[in-house]
Structures are given as C-alpha cells and as structure tokens.
Figure: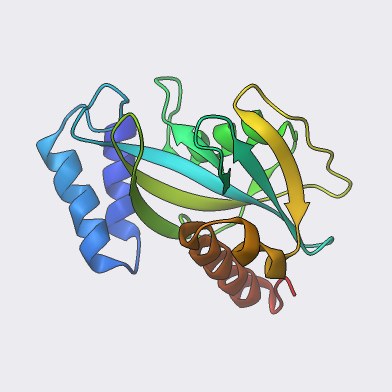
Length: 180
C-alpha cells in the first residue's frame, strides 16, 4: 500500500473535525502527489506531541525556521510506509529520544496551516516518551524544552494548545487519567 493510500484510509477512519477531514480527503483525491513537499497546492504532513505522563510534561521544539515553540513534525518521506511511521520518525529525529511509542487510537487532531513552502495539512499524533527520556537538539531546532501543560498557552500558539488538550483527553479516556 502506498503512503497516499494509507493517508486516505487513516483520514476516512478519523472521527471528528468533519469539514477539515473532508478537505484533506478532497486534496488527496485531486493530487496524486499530495503527500510530498513538491505539491505546491499543499501537502499532507505528520507531527507528534511528545508527552511524558510520568513527569506530567510535554516536549516542544523551538523551530529553527519558524522561531515558534511547536510539536515535532514535518514532511513525509518516501521511506515512510504510513502516516503514523512519518509522525514517529519526525518525533524521534527532532527530539533525539529513542523508544518513543505512539499513543494508541490513531491521529489526535488535524490542523491546516500555511508555511513558507505551502499549506500543510497536518495529521497530528501523540507519542509517549520512555521513563527517563533525555532529549537532544537536532539541526531543525534552536532549542528543546519540557513544559508543564499549564505553561503551553504562554509559549505556543493555539494549534499546539488544541493538540495538547486533545492528547490529554485521549490519555484520560485510554488510561483513566491524564496529565495534570
């Protein structure tokens, strides 16, 4: 199965954000190249919020180009078999943390935003950091920092806040608790 086909299946199964979900599906139907950076009409991207529930913190990156605190993420690569693989790869590369695991249940949210290269139709996941995880700054980051959830609105934009809230809800639903 191609990454394009996987993305369509993931989005068809995604529950919520119906209008945006349909816009993503329409984009894929109209653009066979809609997964790649070369698609000037926009492209599907994958990101992941790195969460350490044991510490009750979230890891954000100070993005080198955008100079904003964001979740890890970016463009899909030809080597990515699935959107989930792309999100996990991006989170691992940008955080420097080995052993990250995807939060079960598929994507947490969708977020469409304009970037210098094109529209990003971002499929957002959450990943769990292993106990004692130590981050390492990549070439794509100016900084990495762990934040308590109540600090996020002061440092990040509304899209990161929405991703955090959706992740916390997923954690509560899946494990009977969530990050404070």
